[in-house]
Length: 342
Image (cartoon, rainbow, N blue to C red; front, side):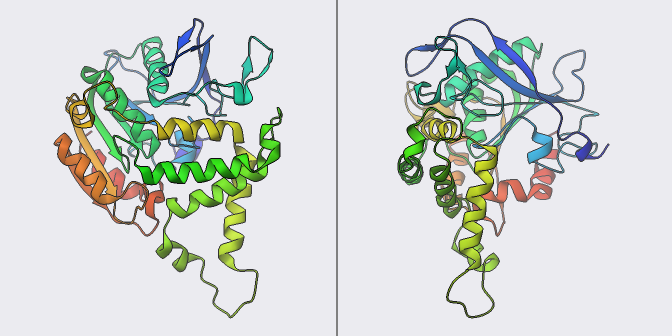
């Protein structure tokens, strides 16, 4: 079966019908987690590959990571039971700022509490039990998905055989926080962001996305792909590209969700309450594979390599002309590396 035949399926929903405590204090009265599965769980309940998605993706990994969910591919449904859950705060079906607050009967919007990566993992843990999964063969996460995978591997080290982390770090750097804050400032500069409506903050979201493209790619990428061949005074390709990316995200995402998810990224620190980053990373007992992208200016290759050294992980550098986004584009190379461990 071709991967396109797996993509586009409707998600399933798991409901946590009890108060859900949050790391930052307080609780959600209940939680829903949207998720996709591909393949069949075996009798031993241990043929599982769990994928943690990045910032604005969803649980349909066959859709946003084409070429992976296919027989003979990395996420082979004929061999493995593949799970991808939509993280809390995201607008793709899980509890988020645009789901209903049972206390008011209206969407939460900015009343939605701040959540952390640990809160997301806490929801995954309950879903895993509900699905009857005894052991996870490999957990895979890139970018913010890697933050989730790392956190879970520390929380339940005996659950995983292998942990695969791409372009991610154990603690968010001031550089990334600065980028997130610039994006939040763009959201806040749009007066409709503070209105209680589903499309509030649309222009701010478009501007925030345009900002984020600068850190997801790099100057070499833009200079190569957005070059204007003839002399111009206006209508530059790079300008059109930025507006296109902003408008494209507005059509499929939500500004209030984006705001809270940026905050959850900034607070990521596996060492919090665990004696620091190095002590936390050493709690991971699974075989660990770490991949950095040589042109990434968000989670830079030297930083990712240093994390791998602390963990004693198998480390690979992936070449890509697309910077941080290379973890979504260089699929054949990532597949080649990870299939060795399956």
